[in-house]
Image (cartoon, rainbow over the protein chains, first blue to last red):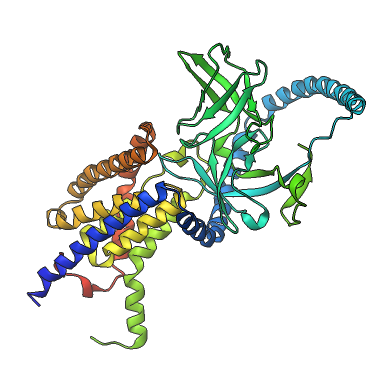
Length: 285
Length: 177
């Protein structure tokens, strides 16, 4: 028994060392983004997805209850604010109706091919908490619901990110604040094109701006649709600072309330008939 | 020593408690809490677990289990595969080789040790993540993650100490490697 102890220690040390090397090897493999690693990832998330789905529901309910109480305390001012807003929006509603009619007649005049209809797939966020180095979430819909890599993920407010990995019943969404996120965008007023590049901070940067670009804080940034992966015109965020070469954009999505998202199935309608599923529903863009 | 089948099964189940518990904590750490800014600074609960068991009962959390825990963390949080595995294994190795320095010491000494270890672990994961992405990732979230992990240590170890009492005593008093 006395001899066995140092021997066991050596075996343990050897096991530890080989496992560290294996982990380093995996890290290099995952950097190369092999199909094998991706299959492993999606395989594991598929298995855990139902558990995470179940776990995240009560937590979301608790968060909602807390939110409700907080909202109760400021019902009165909120009500007054909403009344004012309704009046303003009513005016806009009239304008929109008139423009829509105009648009329809003008399109008819031009024989304009109608824009492709877009399909939405709704999904629930079942995991975030990636830590300091990634900005991504897991959602409870996957390839069998029609999700594919590269699709845009939106909330009611605007663009949240893109699908980066799809399993059968779960998928990972790379948020637009992530280090690896690059989204072709355009400024709504000045029509300046750029790429929105995440850097893990709350406010991603605009890169590849033309030299004479003049962006002012407050300008809305929307997707440009270049590259064909994302539909054009999705609201992304608002320019917050535009000085010293770096222009930063405040995303429009409220990350803390990211519970339900919609994945935009952009190409499938034009390329092939959309598969019918329980989570699928049609709507305009 | 040889008990009935059920007795042995019970023993095995109890021995799997540290690994199972750590995996459950990883699951909990990725559940969306809807707290502003929380998802970027989630505490490394797995690190607390590895630190605790490496000092108190390394047999119950062998290197292969630590490796599995690290991979599980990478799979669920979307970090480069292997990153947490490397960090946790190196932490584990360092602690197991120095565990005599921690055994039987007061809680504050062990907690202070965790301050150093968790700082080193977060720093190492920052270095690895930055190297893998080819940029210097901003450090603020990492600092808060370290502070939160450190602050949660007493709560977590109270729980682990309770759990440790349930695990059969057979493996106790076995000298560490």
